[in-house]
Amino acid sequence: MTELQCLFAAASLARHRSVLPRRKFPATGSPSSYRLARVTPLVVVLFAACVAHAQGPTTYAGFRQIEFPDAVTGQRVPLFVWYPTSQASRPTKFGPYTLDVASGAPPAGGRHRLVMISHGTGGDPLSHAQLGIALARRGYVAAAPRHAKDNSRDWSGVGTYEVWYGRPRQISEGIDAILADPSLGAVIDPDRIAVIGHSAGGYTALALVGGHADMDHARSHCRQHPDDGFCQVRRPDQTRVAAPSVPIPDSRDGRIKAAIAMAPPGILLDPVSLAKVGVPVRIYAAELDAVVPVRYHAEPLRQTIKPTPEFVLVRGAGHYSFVEPFPEAVKEQVGEVATDPPGFDRAVFQEKLRREIAEFLDRALR
Image (tube, rainbow, N blue to C red):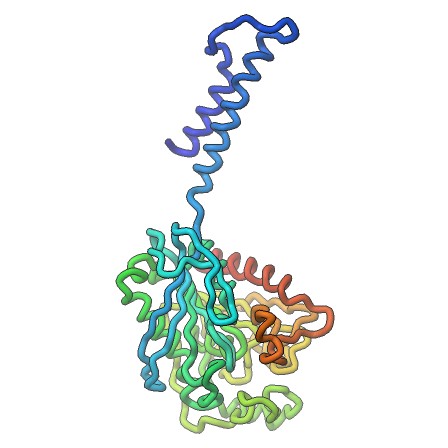
């Protein structure tokens, strides 16, 4: 029965009360009130069934971890994958994190849009796990690599050629790995793929849609603007802004049809190349970002990328407000990355951010 047929049947039952057998009625009640009393519960039940039918079965978030070889670093890269499934999820421990997923569950049938997620410098796929889960429940497949030599366990390549070129290559290699997977590849629509990234992951996202890495441009900017937090030697990912000396190849991946960059270091990308992006882009900037100040990074991207990107300035936010809240057990260990400007509620913002991201992707990947 279709949704329309179901609703028509309920409406017909409500109209044709006379089909019920006649009975003797209590002195205090009329025939019509008696029939209505008998029919109303039936109508309510049938309408409820129609609503359930229209909503369809509940979609849960499945989870798998696969690996793929990275040609740039020679390492094997873990890829965390969240996907829609009909199998019920349950709280599952991932180190200090507890995620509501169905580990190893079969993916739901159909052709699902794919979203690749790139964490920031020294980050981890779990930094955006709730985003992956939310997208999976919405019908997307979301996948996040632990970038080689630039993650919470290994910072050895930060600022080098292996990272600036390796990061976007690992997203493309991750797409290859998912499409080649017998289970996941069969349910992905290869014509509807997007990328999301934060900080260095934002650079990664923009490089994949045509932004060309230009370290000469970055060096020139830092000589002119030493007040730019990204140029100051106070963090591991800022100490080697002058490297690498070897030109970084074009990283555009034509399969990617949309990008979201959150607090990206825009000075790393050639402005001429950004004018040729040609796909929908949304830029998020944090008003109080001291790492990549808006005036030096996000605002120039807003003016340069074509077509003109959607632009969201998050009032009161800091650079790390785009990272999901950390479990209490590790907040002290994480330090600055777990801290926001006074008065900013990261948990509330993250819920809003996930909704906005999903809405943008729904439009961009129709």
